Length: 255
Ligand code: ADP
Ligand code: MG
Ligand code: MG
Image (cartoon, rainbow, N blue to C red; front, side):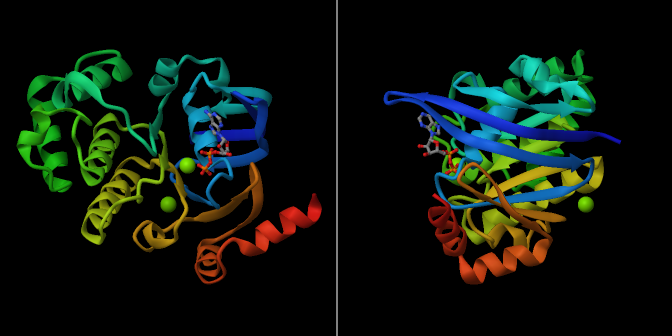
């Protein structure tokens, strides 16, 4: 049974104006096969949490821990985190000029597994996943994220998720910029990975829309760098009706 634990996480970022504390004591435990949604207003630190889990050098952990099956994630390089089974789909995925989708996937798979996948099985898996995600086969020969539409970028991330088979995936606003059809296709991909491999998921979103397609076991409301409230799927319904105002009022009253 795999578990990803985030304990009392405090994270700073260096800005032109000096050091800013963004995460202020985040506690979160995600067990294998659980789907956790993090919802919160813009600027509350959701992407910072995602980047910190992934190991982005800009974000400095000043206190707290991240453990994957008891191993200290914060001591691992970005590559080691991927090999240990962590996957991050960025809110703003980067272009990789000169590297095709096919080559990227194969290189990543080889690096993560420690050996190259057998060619025949691999080609079949890639074709099957692309077809599930309703991606044109010509897509495989394009350079990663170069000129991709918003929807293509997100599908490409879910393609990686399906093929790389991580233990835990952090999906940062995978729903942003998707029309309803693309949202369904992407959500089905996430649900397939969850059902097939017992993937644990941290689904970061500003809107409740995606939660109609991916049903969370837990919902956490993120405000001003920490979790302000947690509950089950019903909490998302309440947020849809009431928005985040209530939390922000409470926040300013406390200051
Ligand atoms: P969210 O994803 O919830 O919208 P972010 O984690 O992107 O929030 O940002 C939280 C806060 O941290 C914002 O005020 C943002 O401006 C600031 N921040 C995040 N990353 C950086 C950075 N690299 N440099 C400066 N400020 C940053
Ligand atoms: Mg489940
Ligand atoms: Mg964000």
